[in-house]
Image (cartoon, rainbow, N blue to C red):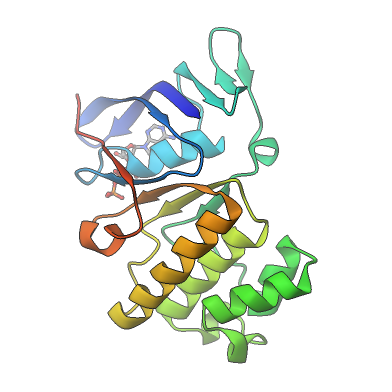
Length: 208
Ligand SMILES: Nc1ncnc2c1ncn2[C@@H]1O[C@H](COP(=O)(O)OP(=O)(O)OP(=O)(O)O)[C@@H](O)[C@H]1O
């Protein structure tokens, strides 16, 4: 079980706004996160990953305290080891497709399988600037999966992928998440695209 109860002040253009989220999420569950632009969806994922610190709250993962502001516990991001698919991909400009995956894992058969899932087998020697937006986004997803993370945080992960490829990819990911027992949080503006994938949802409202 992942239990989250956090409060984070957001500095917005219109003044201050507080992101307040409380909820329990079963291990292995897939939760879609939605809500208006600027409500704090990306910030919520970053708080879970350990990239952003909230002022108040706690996060318990499978009985382990990742965050507890009253006892000043905050596990560093490298110990939380969550997989993260960034909205802007955050690929390494000087690394090829294969190097991105080899940087994350030494398991060659796993890399081969991931390349097949992302349909990037023929592009292994390409650097990001020679990939289309959809190919870059698929690489960002594969890189996040390379470490076989127990927790995967995905920020608008399918926004640049064409509909046919998206349907196939989502079907493959669904099987993979089940096999790995991955707990997933997916931010999505376009709810139907993750409809078949998720089994729970979390709405983040704008609160001032
Ligand atoms: N570390 C931070 N500390 C305080 N405020 C932040 C921080 N990061 C982002 N913000 C602010 O919080 C607000 C919410 O940003 P965020 O990107 O989380 O929203 P979002 O719901 O993901 O939006 P969108 O759907 O447009 O991507 C923004 O106004 C942003 O400037």
